[in-house]
Length: 291
Ligand SMILES: Cc1cc2nc3c(=O)[nH]c(=O)nc-3n(C[C@H](O)[C@H](O)[C@H](O)COP(=O)(O)OP(=O)(O)OC[C@H]3O[C@@H](n4cnc5c(N)ncnc54)[C@H](O)[C@@H]3O)c2cc1C
Image 1 (tube, helix red, strand yellow):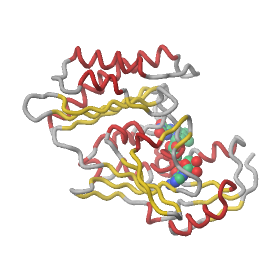
Image 2 (image 1 turned 90 degrees about the vertical axis):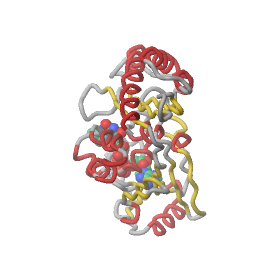
Image 3 (image 1 turned 30 degrees about the horizontal axis):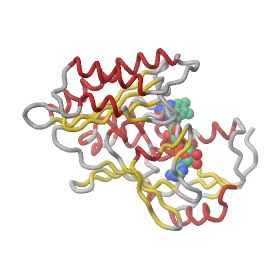
Image 4 (image 1 turned 60 degrees about the vertical axis):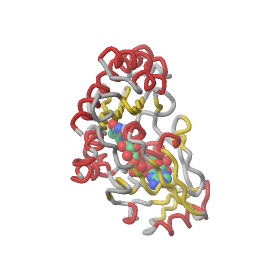
């Protein structure tokens, strides 16, 4: 049963930040409520005050320009990202990821910012955004700060957000030429959370197909989404072959810290990672060659 609370529905970022500052740890922010309401029903979270930010339209947008790249407001629903022509044309991997996130109902109401702030290590957006080298913008009454998406996740359901702060924007830098990014998750039930997820972004040098840069990110494989940096080193600076990708997959599976739960054993998750890093790496290379 949900405990009684007082609800505020600010219409501007400034109003929301003022309320957050006033009520401190007695309040909780709610956006789409797709994750928070489950915790409230279970009695795991019982705020005195709920700051409902869903109506702050200034945080619901998708913009892109040649200099700054893509900027997504934190309150943008998953479904808007999935359907955005801007994203489908420039960063199709984000639309593909969203297309497999939850059901259409959840995607219609849940927001990208809420997903990231929930800090679930099995969330789909984080591995893709980390692979794309995204930055997160946060605001409080004290001002703004930005942080690499990679540094935002501290532990299971714990992020770097401080008391009084809101996530306001996700920024994806302009993707370098000859770069391909791909993502997949393995899940038992379609539209459910990942048993494991893998995102790979590879930049090839223009002519010889050498791997100039690579980011391999594992989801649902550790307390936070995590880069497989030793696996990346296997590929960086080399012409990527099937054998090298297989070696990267093997190493990534040992870099992970998966758990055993009702969906899969630790061993099965490691095996999935071994296979998926190679598979997603191949897809990223195929895309890099087209760009
Ligand atoms: C049936 C079901 C299936 C799902 N399947 C998937 C899936 O396959 N993949 C996946 O990744 N997710 C999945 N989810 C999770 C869900 O889609 C996301 O967690 C959802 O996007 C959260 O967004 P929200 O706006 O609803 O956040 P809320 O539930 O409102 O908030 C979540 C948390 O973030 C905080 N918060 C929200 N916005 C901000 C902000 N701007 N600044 C600071 N703090 C903020 C809240 O205080 C709360 O702690 C599923 C959920 C359900 C119910």
